[in-house]
Amino acid sequence: MKSKIHEHPKKSIMRVSKQFILSIATMLMMGVSISAFAAKNEDGTVNQLIVKSFKKDFNGASNIIWEQRDTYTKATFSLHGQVLFAYYNNNGDLQAVVRNITSDQLPISLLSSLRKEYGNCWISDLFEIVSDDQTSYYVTLEDSDKKVVLKSQGTEFWSEFKKEKKGAGL
Image (cartoon, rainbow, N blue to C red; front, side, top):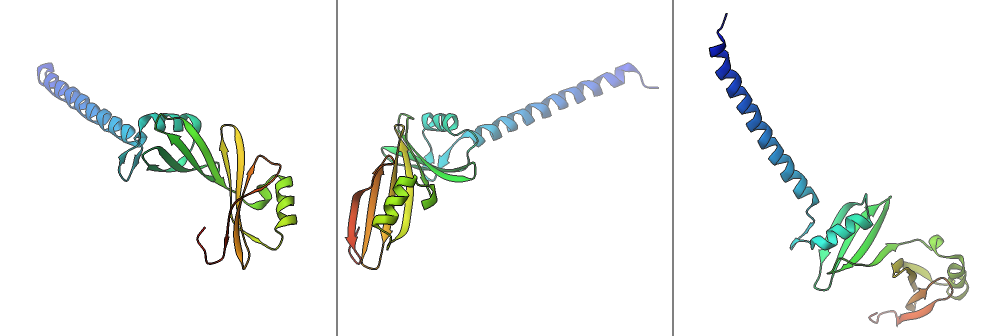
């Protein structure tokens, strides 16, 4: 039978060792959680005002890729199975959200107008922009001779944004 004098130092050493290990584990966990929330791009850390706004605006987003420019920051990410693009100014204010869409996602009036006026063209690009609670659509249409970009403010009609003949720069 061991005396309590011999057991006490072992318990004390074990208690200190457990506390030391627990402290290190806690610091490691904090480091991991801090790095998990730090948004970075190839040039360094993204403006944390923007990151905070983004987390509030797009809770549950994944696969986030940041691109920081002089006047804005772009986040490319996945949310609910869609790839989206969010643009923020340097104050952390959301400026626009963009997504690529298919023609069947257009409002019916815009789709009907395209089919009626550009039925001989194919769609090479189509996206939706939401900014300041307004939705705009841009479509690039092509045929063998020309390429045209149309823009729609809202759902009523298209207006010509750019036009080019094949072989010229758009």
